[in-house]
Amino acid sequence: MLPPSEAELQRFQKQCPPRVHLRFNRNRQTLVSLRQSPTTRQWTLSLRPELLQYPGCEGDLLRFIAQNGNGDFPYLRQAVQDLFERLQHHQAQVIANVIDPKLSRLPTVGHEIHLHQRLKALQAQYWPELNPPHISWSRNPGPRPLRSIRFGCYRTSPTPRITIHPRLRQPWVADCFLNHVIHHELCHHAQHCIPQRRFRREPIHSPRFRQWEQSYEYYMQARQWERAYVPYLMDPNKPRPHRTPDQELV
Image (cartoon, rainbow, N blue to C red; front, side, top):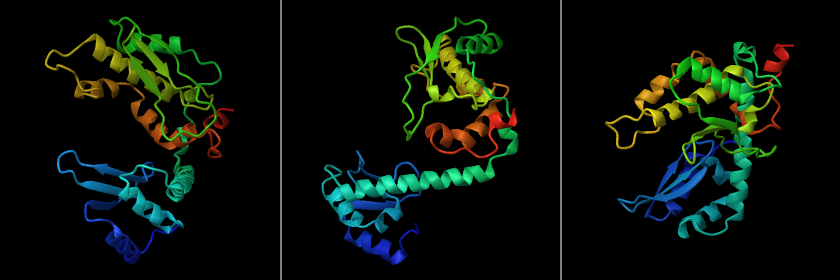
């Protein structure tokens, strides 16, 4: 879908009330949002311009503004859903065409995944002095597509615990990426066990955390694999590129 012309954008901008600042975005996740600054009280409508091409969406957007985002806007809701799916499909096609063959040849986790053994090995290599946290899979969201995904989570209460997203429990997932996620959460465990006195509350991803995280020996490969394959982790129904990790290892 082509974005609207400059004249169409200006026409819509003139219809917006003066209290609202209009900003066109290129986001692939948040296609439309209406927020008020707590300091200036200025409202800002952030909008993916392609939404203006959908029938009935322009009127819904003006009502969306008038009601400060409260209410039901069926044309806008349908347009956002359709455009989101189009953008995700386009991104998947782009990624499928540019995936580095080296990434698809990385060793995979296979069908037998023992989280506790992986945690034990990584802790022995990077944090042998710490007491290990518990580790388990988190709740399975099923086969539905996700709009966002959190691969791992670390909690300190009631006892230190790491949970790993079950979408990583697939045989084609790169071995180095699963270990990277566990190592990332171990870095949070180290933050908890070795507090910095100069911080009342250390930032979650502080400079020392980033240094620890990047000490993982396959950090770069894991991050490259993540960028290439995250669309297929978020939507298990999306066909992966022909050259997949499990096919390469046959």
